Length: 302
Image (cartoon, rainbow, N blue to C red; front, side):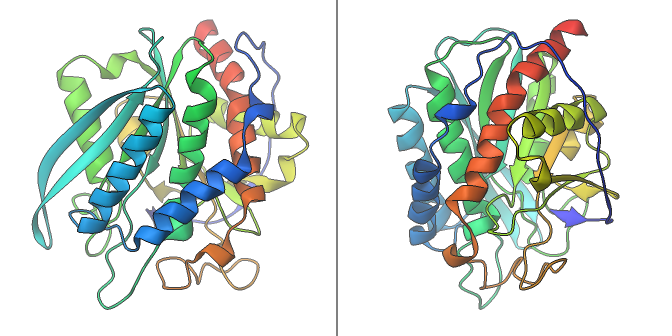
């Protein structure tokens, strides 16, 4: 992802909850174990042997949770030449027509000469999403939460309109062509969510009613202090959805560093397991689960 601005504010709203509240079911130990297992693989940049191992691990966990899988394989040009990518999409067996996408990227940044294991970026959000999938798989609800693990979020050079977000850009194009995109009612993206000093700053171009739903849910759980509203935009996997007219939100902590306000661990070899915590994963995971009924109510009202 690439950041465009900074700043924090807040807001709130109450909505009817037609979905079950599953927030107490999130197991932070499970989520953190997934992160540990992914980090143990090592670097997982797009097109590498590492990301293939990560793909196999994610597949095994989703199948164990009882989900149905779709693999979206494609090739795209990059500054390093043609690269093969593969998005992983998981559906509950009881899925309906309308969807709420819960998403993460599972590739890590390619950094020449750096052993970049990406505990926070992208280990934390991938571990979080795997645990959310486990919790939700056995609880039918509508619209159906579906889980998307994007490949190729990271750029190979400087982030641009053509270098980075390979997986999300491809999925939006492909689903639009085959009439699938119109089934997506909302998209919730998680990225950099494991920092011990969690400070989620939701970018200002996230859809306002989704921001309010997240703030309300976190407040009801007593976790509101971990979520803020960041002035400025972030180029991340939610952007292709916003551009296609899909309501979307990015839950991201862009203060991943050695002191408050700094981001000096991001895209460095300092992005290691000791910098993240199960508690941070729990805060974000429980908040997303608490938010889902509010999203369903808002979708129904619209």
